[in-house]
Every structure is written in C-alpha cells, then in structure tokens.
Image (tube, rainbow, N blue to C red; front, side):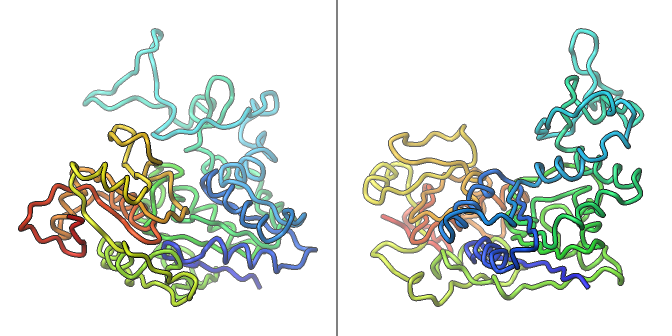
Length: 388
C-alpha cells in the first residue's frame, strides 16, 4: 500500500527542510527523487543537503520537474509516439512562456485566423506541434507528450519509474498545471510513495497553459486531489504540519494573510531562535522622496515586479518571482499601480498572478517590509506604519 500525501505549506514554514529530513531518513537501499519546478529551488535543496551532509547521498536524486520529465517520461519510449523519433533524437527543451507552435508564412510573418487570433499547428502536424525545427520539445507540451507515451506503451513509463524509485517528493507543486495533473494522477496510481508539497498562494510560475483541468489552475492542487482521484487512489492532505512561519514576524504574517482571507491565517512559530527582534520590525510605507534615506538607514533588498521599475542600483535588487524560497532580513517593495490600490483598500481586487507575486515579496522578510507608497499625512492605511 503506497503512502500518498499532499502537504499545504505556509511561506517560511520549512517545507524544504521537511522534505530533506524525510528523504535523508529513508533506507539507503531505496532510491528517492526530489523534484521541483525552478532551477533556483533545485540548487537550494542541494545546498541544504550539503549543509546536513558532506555530499548528496547516492540514493537521492535531485532534479527539476522538466529534467525529470525529459529523462523518465520523454526519452525512454520516444519512438512510440511517432516513427520519426526512431531516426531523430530529441535535442532538449525550449522553454515556452506562452502557447507554442504558432504558424508563420514563407516570409516569417505570423498567420492569423479570422477574428484576429494567431494560427497554431495541431496534433496532426506532429513535428511542428511538439518540436522546434531542430527537434527541441516545447516545454508546454512535455507533460502531454509523456502521457501520450504512457498510453502508447500501455503504462510502461510509470511501470519503469516504479522500478527505479520507492519515493518521490514534488516540491512547489502549486506551479504545476494542465497535463501535469494527469502525471500526478498516474504517479498516485503507481507503487511509488508520493509526497506533494506546496503553497497555493505562491503560484508565480506555471509549467504550461493547457486547458486540461482548467478549474485547478492557480494552485488549486487540494481541490484536484479531493475531486479527481476517485475512491481507488488514496491521498491524505496535511494542512497543519507546515502552517507556521519560521521566517516572518507577527506583523508580516498578519499583513500577508490579508491577501488570502479564504486561507487559514498564517502565524509565526514559537521557536526562540526565530523570534529575535530589532528596533525596526513590521510593515512600513515609505514615500518616494524618502526611499534613498530609508535604503541608507536599513540597507533593505529592493523587490520589484519587473525590470521596468527604476531602483537604486547601489543596493541589492530582485524581481518578485526570483526571491521565492529566500529569506531576507529586510525588503523594500516597489508596488504596481494595482498593488497600490490594494494597499489603500484591501478590498481592491488583484489578478491572481499579481497577488501571488506580491505575497511572495511580502513574505521574504524576517524583520521588516517597506512599501514605496506616497501617502498623505491624514491617510489611514490598515496594517502598516508610516515611516515618517
């Protein structure tokens, strides 16, 4: 009987630490895979294991989600999808941030359908649908390709995986979408112990934009597990083990929780080492004219939505999406116009992607979060303090 579980984690709750602790305690005769969406998080997992041990144990493999799918889903039985793949090797992956395989005319100009939409290749055009001209597979088609291979080979993809790994951990599961959910379902059906870990509030990326399982996009992995697995596939959901933050203080927890009122409110842990205080803790708003002085005083890391935002190059700077998983003592956030509306009134709506990125930015700091916001002297802003 396999042990499948989904762990819902709050930001800073120690999900990577939990995965590593469990993986290191598994018998050395059993092979373990830890897979995660981003290269940055893969590096973080490696570095944390190396801090625990002098080397990565031989029975533990760490790789990104796409690398895992390429090695174990695409490559082993690629020829089953089309005879062309017996003669042509797949030469890696092309990362697709939007729908892949658009059509162009002989001059390289995009083709459009009536009504203005782009024309795209369909599945009957096998090579053009899945691959670039030099046989690199489109990233948004990998999961679909893997499921197709598994169907063509009558289940050999996941039978093979079951003979390699006894346990698989999938970190940052909230970033999976479309046919990734079908892969999760097949993994749950296998003899492998599967643990999914993620925070549905941190959907800053998406592996693909397929319409498969559209109602579970934007991190609704819990809803998928509850609705789509059926009675024969078991999976327990744990929402208590990782609900407290070892990173954020009470004020940061309170303010970030306002973004997702439907979720249980995040609370700080009670660990003595995590609860150190300084003379400048909490959430602050800082006028634009005061940013230079604030940076000089607190040396905060600047966080912005995109590179289009002007910052002070004398101080550290990152985009919102780049800091997921990181702990920073102090941050200063340059909000978008929509985020400013939310700061003014927490009832203002934010798009899912903007909300998730802002949540990530808010929850990076250990001590203080400053938000650049030109407030008036008599303006009251819920949940924050005015720096001046």
